[in-house]
Length: 307
Image: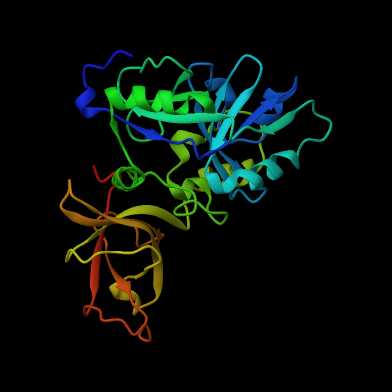
């Protein structure tokens, strides 16, 4: 495999644990396009698209990536969504010639963060932007997992789950079970640009998304948060504005220390009216928590991505 010229800056992740589905049948294009927020025509055999699957109320059922093969579509999602996503999709197969097969264990999936395409001996290469930088997915038979891993590790730095999580938070990328849940609308999670096509045909949940687009308002928004006193932040912490006498105006979904910034940072949802850049908020620690705490943990709303 050819080593890229910027190999020192390039890295790869092992995403093989993600839930994976193969969708076949003569009606597969019309069916899948009617289930997702993005336009399936943007995808190809060499480029995947990012999309959301919604319920009728416009709330998230899944955050997915889709790539096209000549005879099928391959879909991947967070591991926890495997059974739920399949059930959600099959619910809308009425008289369609569509088959959905769980192929999680049949494929390995790697993602390479590099400006140049990798050239492994095994697998299919698909361009896709999973993070803030251009990247490449490598789909290969599960039996080739170790061989592909060895080839990639000889040319790229391996990002383990901890390092990948820090990078994700620094880039402001929402993740299922943290920022993305069944109570979130994609626009609230800043997924509008990458996952929603307003010109395509109908899909489940479209009416809610279109109304929100026309109003230009959301009840809450995913924001970047920085601890002003360098006190570590934690997911689940509630947020209040000094002017609201402790009334909750948001919550933290992910947190880490960014060594590149030298700061304690977090992602979190903040309600409208309190989420402008530069707004200062306090972390609410329950009085009966029994934990030692500073008089106040002050944070500031900052633009995403952090870097």
